[in-house]
Image 1 (cartoon, rainbow, N blue to C red):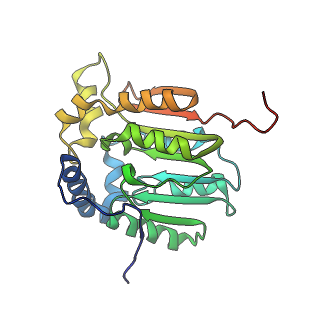
Image 2 (image 1 turned 30 degrees about the vertical axis):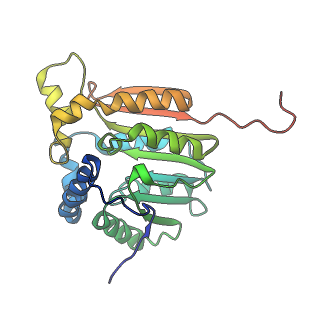
Length: 245
């Protein structure tokens, strides 16, 4: 059965930039991994890594309530969906955004298997996604550091949040001043998706941290697993109402 998803990327430029080549590489890589991703993802960045516990912690940091709307950026096969569903309930709304059609096909399988009617999927590059206005929360887990324009994604998402809405990012980073084996652990997950040297040189976690500090209030940065991962969270300041000073 063929599946079609709304394309939110717009018309692509003919000029193939480095970012375009990187996106094409990510698409092909994840297409190959999609079929067994739910199983193999448990092995990254290393067997026994507390990925599910960290995902749960990230969802809790969103502060979701029943009926809320949330965007799962780079949702993959929908591993966060059960956790988000429990938080927002059947009256809430979940929008899963991902670059790769094969990953979204697996996410659609998960939606249909669970009978969720409040989840929609959008095939889009994170950097080109048109965030809907007035969403209550945005989540990204183990993905945003792969996006060269990650700081812009943070800014665009922050602008779309409702007053008090939360942005939460869970991702990997290179630990500072730690043994070599921990550095290898922190970079293992990106080896199949990008040049580790380029990833380390770009230090995207620093761009994410700076953007969230700039765009959001109540910013919190927590390093996890000896600095091999981080949880960053912040909220959009409440809008002033008529009559406020």
